[in-house]
Amino acid sequence: MTPWWHEAVVYQIYPRSFLDTNGDGVGDLNGITAKLDYLEWLGVDCLWLTPIYPSPMADFSYDVANYTDVEPLFGDLAIFDHLLAAAHGRGMKVILDWVPNHTSSHHPWFVDAVSSPSSAFRDFYIWKKGGADGTPPNNWVRAWVDAPAWTYDDTSGEWYLHCFLAEQPDLNWANPAVRTAMAETLRFWLDRGVDGFRMDVIHLLGKDPAFADDDEELKGLGHVVLNNRPETHPYLREIREVVKHYDGDPLIVGEVYLLDPAAVAEHYGNGDELDLAFNFQPLFTPWRAPAWKDAITAAYATHDPRHAWPTWVLNNHDASRVVSRLKSIERAKVAAVLLCTLRGTPFLYQGEELGLENAVLGDGEVIDPGFRDGARAPVPWGSGPGHGWPVAPWMTFPPNAATTNVEVERGEPTSMLTLYRDLIGVRKESTALRRGSFSWVDAPSELLVYRRSEGNDVRLIVCNFSHDSVGFSVDGRLDFATGRDHHEGFDGIVRGDEALIFSIPA
Ligand code: NOJ
Ligand code: CA
Image 1 (tube, helix red, strand yellow):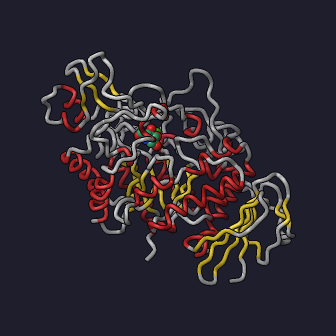
Image 2 (cartoon, protein in one colour; image 1 turned 90 degrees about the vertical axis):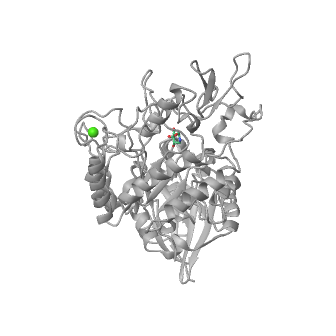
Image 3 (cartoon, rainbow, N blue to C red; image 1 turned 120 degrees about the vertical axis):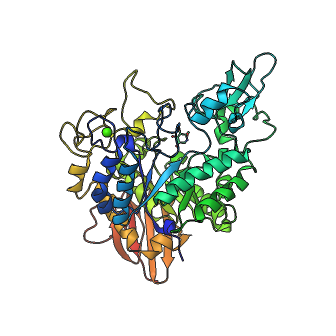
């Protein structure tokens, strides 16, 4: 049986910026429930909510102060249960974001741990002596800025490790008590009926027991992208055991933020670790057909031998939006076709279906410690001044919100929203696109052409990476075109910045 997440289209929600319903300017869980009709209409199968737990918001909820409750800004447990039931009632799954590498410094475990070296929770975190000259225990650099991943604690004279902010101390996964306590947090939500988890920086769990320096040449990248450790894999197998004990085959999809696709694929284990891991290559691959061909080939070459099902991602809350990256809505439409027709599970990020650009912030408006505000702007639902929000939201809307919004785009045949809905529809009707085999087809260098096939269902996907028209003959029926001037059928000319999907004879 094909697992549900092979065929699902997953939609990431950043609750703070989705929709506010109680007039405090911050999106909330009731805002998600209010838009389930929209999400069902769009055709997505699974919602991933970025963290909804109580948090001081030093890293916008990736600093968790309590893993088993809901942040009051977003709602409460009863409101969450209502959202979950309403999503399930529409046949949609809901997965939560689990943040196991670090807690908030306000989490009761850390508050206790920092109070005394003899705290029962001291060993929940990672404490080390520094150099005699006042230097940190090693040269590891934290995320986002060139600063040590260690903070000195005056009381004990020891340093604690934080691969992100000082307000996000790393948990000590080598301590079995940490693993037991974190397993309980998974069970808490699985018992409530959630359908799985997106697992934050999951490759960070295992740490080098020697805490050796990072390679001096690479350390500027930050320890997060360098921490590829064998110790992580048994922890993943334990986590899987906890989750797979539940009915409904809950999904575990990991953020494995390592640059090498082979290293990412290792975190699927032998089918006994993650179900899926994000493949972030599209975020970094230049918009040229040969570069994408190499990236796609590398993803399949590393995943296929392990029977590891790939994933595709164009946007998330940490990255520049694809329209801004490619500087073209037409190219972003081609990218959308790749996302939904390559073999693997597509992950969309709220507002991607509208073709949103990054918000433009003035001096002093950047508040994210990782400088990622631009991709986190509120979703514009309508054309009026408030764009469907009851009061001015916590941050500025993306550019062109008067026209780039759900209300306008729903009625517009050439909009990104119409395109995404149609594309998801084409995918839903095609077993070849959802789970068929993949093979390259020879084509001129500006084009990427590939075939997806399952039984009698055979599709040919043609993507033009250049601005110019390219001749290419196809014996088949045109099902879908990003450029919408093919009503009379295909004339052997792929227009510039256009992608096409054909059904071809088996
Ligand atoms: C990855 C998350 O996607 C990002 O938003 C967060 O800042 C870090 N992990 C730390 O939790
Ligand atoms: Ca609110």
